Length: 94
Image (cartoon, rainbow, N blue to C red; front, side, top):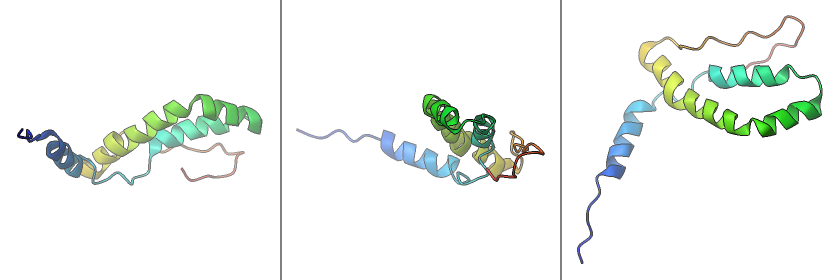
């Protein structure tokens, strides 16, 4: 029985090499989601919202790594602006 050679895995690996060179970027989309979550004063409410929105954090992080940071690497311009902290809150880096 001959094993059929699949070209899908090498194609995916080549696509990843071409599309993911800038995956370690500023992650502005995830920063916006975290900024929204930090607007809640109660730490228990903030943790509950984080756990409920955990799938959204995964989607935002993957979107940042695969789409937005790759766009920034290739074009030099990130389509999502940096989240701006409120004046009364301590400055945080996302």
